[in-house]
Image 1 (cartoon, protein in one colour):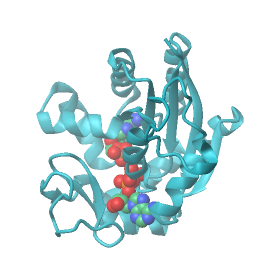
Image 2: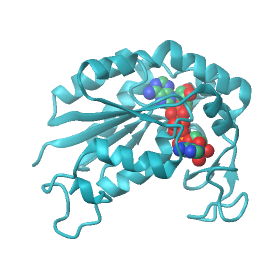
Image 3: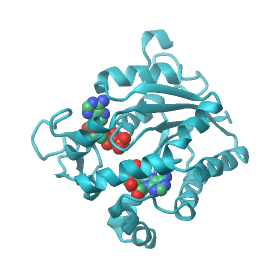
Amino acid sequence: MDKKRAFIILGPPGAGKGTHAARLITDLDLSNISTGDILRDAVKSGTELGRKAQEYMERGELVPDEIVIPIVEEKIVSDRASGFFFDGFPRTLNQADALDEMFSRRRIAVEKVIYLSTPDRVIVERLCGRRVCKVCGATYHVKNIPPIKAGVCDSCGGELIIRTDDDEKTVLNRLEVYRRQTADIINYYRGKGLLTEINGALPVDEVYPRILDALGPKPSAVSSGPGAQGGMTGDDQ
Ligand code: ADP
Ligand code: AMP
């Protein structure tokens, strides 16, 4: 079997990681590992994991590494996709080390890390206007990326809700937590020569092609052959 691919998208909360990950996993045929989504699902289902994670998430704090790292390892082991796209993980240097360790034991390597740099004022505006589908998790913004019908998901017709951690006070705490615990990861991957910084404040249609460019062409071994819908620009082929 070919070596599995792995990509990571980094950036402060609201930078657009989930928005772009949703498109990339389809275009590049990767499995999405969003620790935020996994944890929110667990909270919604009332599992033991959800009960442990909920209080941290509501305060805008990070869920402890001892809880998050095993979840990711479990996903990597059980998922048979040709590669992974990580959104929201790693978020501490300890998580980054754990990921290296998990990968070194398997045929997986981090190929590229995208860093969506985004100023605080943009983040607050984005998170305060974010709406997510209660059913399928699709993400919208009341002004920037509105649904066709207010309050209703374009994809599945589900109700759009405000995330409990998107109130201004929690957003400001999440930004502080990001600066304190996550920002160092940027230098960690920059030091490994894997990082591409992209201006996340630009509109989605300007950010997305830059990410595709940075990730490089989809290898033919993983694509489904000539004419496959790879989502690449002409320059990438
Ligand atoms: P993250 O996953 O990094 O926390 P999201 O992808 O959920 O961020 O995006 C946060 C909010 O900003 C959402 O409401 C989304 O619709 C909106 N958004 C994402 N990217 C852009 C962009 N480039 N321009 C304008 N709004 C954006
Ligand atoms: P996100 O959906 O990525 O914005 O994450 C929402 C919340 O889930 C965060 O504020 C954290 O409480 C928690 N979370 C998500 N990913 C991680 C992670 N890798 N490590 C610790 N906590 C996380």
